[in-house]
Length: 468
Ligand SMILES: *Cc1c(COP(=O)(O)O)cnc(C)c1O
Image (cartoon, rainbow, N blue to C red; front, side, top):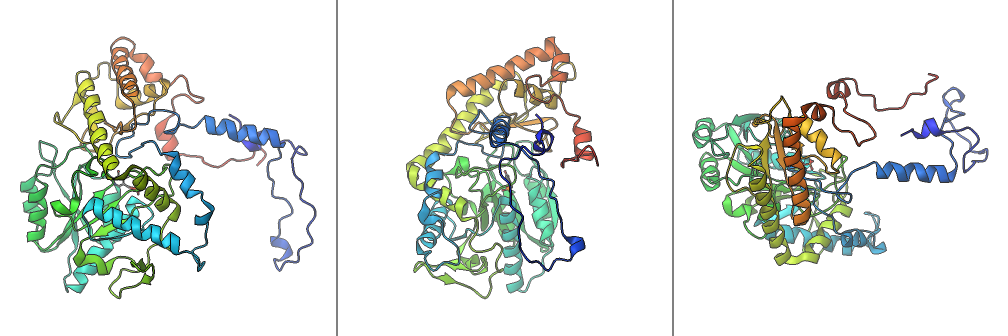
């Protein structure tokens, strides 16, 4: 597809800006006479963007089983609510009590869902929540007069976990996974000492496994004076079933843009609210909204971590989602997410290697170790695109070589699940009989197989005029 600049024809523009008579202090030498913008007629511009949007793939086009990302359907009612003119208000407006009430109530719902005592909706993403939570850990330790330097993180963790912890000045220490896919308790015990500020754990973890020993894990960390942080991006299978506070979690974030069905991808916007137990409430970011819908501040707070009160549009969508489906609906979400993942896992494990063959939560991980003719996970992922599905998350978690992490979500029909399963089985057949085909896939896309190494090392993301 040609770029706007390549389609441009001088003089064909739809609008012309008259010569302006604005006075400016910018020195003559720094002023521009020409912006070199592409020129296209209105209809060509509309067609360009419409065709561009059709080249994209999203949850609204088809099945998107991207593990750990919870690419579920985003109900349109959320968009209707987010567009209401009453919510189109400036944060400095005095007329924002309604918006504050939404924030206040949403925080209360998140408390009810997770069992935490208080939430802040300021953080703008999961990773931002992790940083906020780690800052709270630090503030808590400082108040106790303790200097602790490390945070324990399992080897199956999302890459943002060690990054957030490092950004906050802690050293991440890795703990091994056990043969059953949870945390290796002996390794954890060995790594615990008084320099450990706490643990950052994902449960269910990135293998889709709920840790059988979670109570023991949080007990071990607490016994050493550490705090337990939960990366709650994988809350989908726990809604209405288990509250993280009940298994010993002190701080956690949620990804509203995953679990609570607000659109995501391409870098945002998102929302990663952080919840804490009562003892840590005073450290939450300033300001907070109280029950009288006034702003309150605490002296012990880690301070502001986002302008105003977070990404309000995302909070509104999550609020709408929770109100629309209610507590019974939330529990159904979890049940069906788990059911769909286990259905698919049972069907696919006859054809693909499944390292941890046990009941999974919302996702599971298969790999390419049984593939004949050197067919790899990358080949499989590329071929999946030809069948109008988005490939699963690949080569993650790092502890499984050639991982394919599949999260079907609760919003898919059985027909869709079956169609994907059939495709995956067909690809195994192709791997046996026509491996060359898999090496060259995809065939039905505007651009075929990319050289991934070159794309990463020598990426060119801007357009350069052929004349320059
Ligand atoms: C998505 C995800 C994150 C990061 O969330 P962002 O909103 O992308 O910053 C962290 N941990 C897990 C397990 C995730 O799935």
